[in-house]
Length: 205
Image (cartoon, rainbow, N blue to C red; front, side):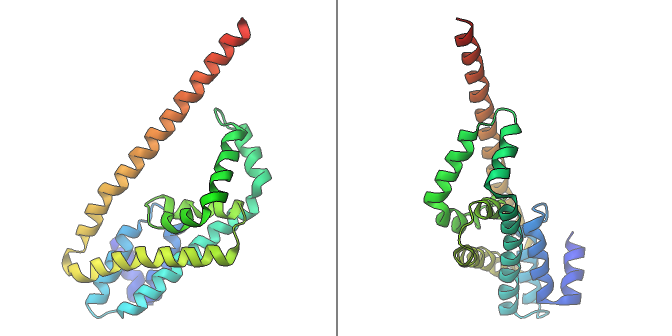
């Protein structure tokens, strides 16, 4: 992957880094934890201007987020509810609770979500479903992305040849997030199955 990224930045410069980050938003397996420090390292070698890297990667983050926001907006609330209704163990009330949470804390969720691995991409979809005002969404996404991108680009810039240390340390945090998500899913499934069993016992009495 690093060879592909290096080639992209060699051909396009800082806009290439921005393009890679835009794609990372759409395809989370492309990790920003690699793209951003590598971009910073490349800038430290004088092949790109540091400010250009920061601007283009933030722009790429916003473009990618807006694309996913559009997906959520096209999907809409009714389709989301229809899809949720067909999923096993999922209740419409679960979606309604999520909606209520997003309506109360949507701004904070979008801003801080841009700094959480995995969620930084996915958070754009519920924002689109809930039709968060586009200007507000764009400003919050830009602010959150600018902070996240600057931290990682500067880390790569300052670490130089050791930029891969960033990926190693952040990878641990990403694994923790994944573990928490998996645990939450397992707990959710367990609770739903227990509720089903109770419902069956109650109906037999």
